[in-house]
Image 1 (cartoon, rainbow, N blue to C red):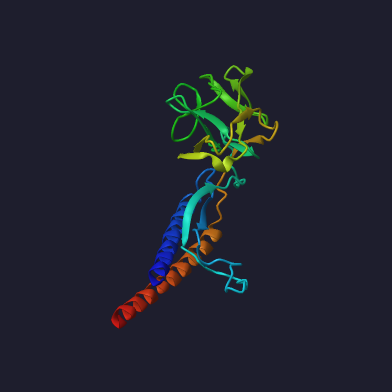
Image 2: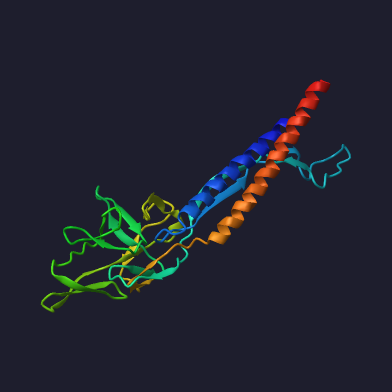
Length: 263
């Protein structure tokens, strides 16, 4: 019985370690463009039924009103990211785009596979293509800017227009957004990008502002949805929980030594 209690406490320490890692990740992403808050999912393990509730307690058929069940600890079963809207950061930069609502920019990886991102700090590569920052991955559908572009306009519905040195204005492409039935089920691959999974549902792509897709706002981008004060409160609570569980282990160790001495 004592050994099982110590195992329960150890499971609590592992859960606290997972919470600490999650909190550290959230704090690290506090100022990331479109940084998303991670949540850890912890559940209790199966209970041991030493006495089943409602079982007969005697030959006369008396019913036990409560039973006796022992927990076997807790376990980490998963984590997910919250896709609530991040803060809006005005920049005045023509290629910064804020998704005002649901949706992800479709992006093509070098191996041809599809990924999705809410990072709106867009860039232009050396061939004039519109790409993601840091990675240079190309948005889909591909949009290429003329070499003599002097002004860029991106509408709420994703139409990309340019003005060239001769004063000519023209539409050169259309940004699209993709939504998922369960975005929390997306697989995160880093650099603010995600891929679909069996849990996310199939991607539904269309014009910004249509269906469930949000509109676009130019010259601004999405900041993090992580609140520093919430993470600091969680950090304090993790420390308290860790200290309490450590005390359980120390108490159990003393009881174990005492039991062995008596034996």
